[in-house]
Length: 130
Image (tube, rainbow, N blue to C red):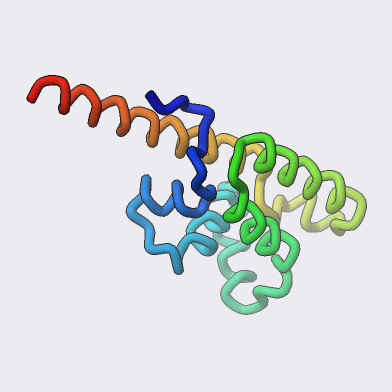
């Protein structure tokens, strides 16, 4: 049985795309938009539409997370991003939360893996009743 913690040789982008029926080409914008702070979402969307370079570091993180092949790699990349940008990021981005949320990313990863695990369990149950 698949373990809820396991990527089973797939990347996070592959698992995310499968579980949310998201075309692979839309993985990056989908993950980026779902990981923004909700309180600043309207302002973040406007900035994203007119000046994507403002979110360059955030978008690089999303791209990197797509290639992660296990939970430890995912977690370490999010932590490293936080450490690197905490010193560099300007006060407005911090105060107004105009950035991706590491907590949202980690919670989303856990939800994706749990949804995948539940789908595998359901499939196994369906096979056993046939």
